[in-house]
Image (cartoon, rainbow, N blue to C red):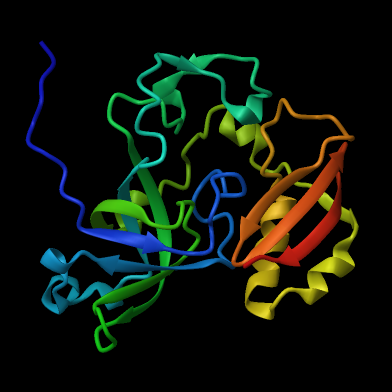
Length: 231
């Protein structure tokens, strides 16, 4: 019999410009140019609960894969960065195919707002979560014990420096509002495609911050095919 313990309580939700799963960074802290705001649910909307949080630079977020809740558990998965054709154990990855659909992200605090409507509001940078994702808990990041400078990153270390170069169509980014432009550029450079998609003729698209972006990739060169505002 499976062991169960209590029920999850959603304490907050995060809101940002990631309107589709495609385009979300693979890990937190990759696109720090993108800002999100954490808004607490009414039952947990207490300024007292965040007292002292402004003294920290980063926090841990525990959250639910709310759009992937029916994926179920898989003992082995194919990480996209390994080309989608090599299996590793699910616990050696951050795949959503887990017994409990829980995500973990480290994000930078930009501001803790205890004055505005619906406060407290926590503005953070570097989230890797879909707009509206439910949050289960918030904990401070502690450098003296959370940071391990001699840590080994397994297979992830071998692909962490992979990046694309925007060779064509970069002029289209000039029509994007300044507060969204760098985030979109960083998303493209970090290649949101699954690694097993390598056809130079295929057009990919995602939406971010009210903009629709289309692009293609050949080798490590990216071409922005179209970019326009959406309603």
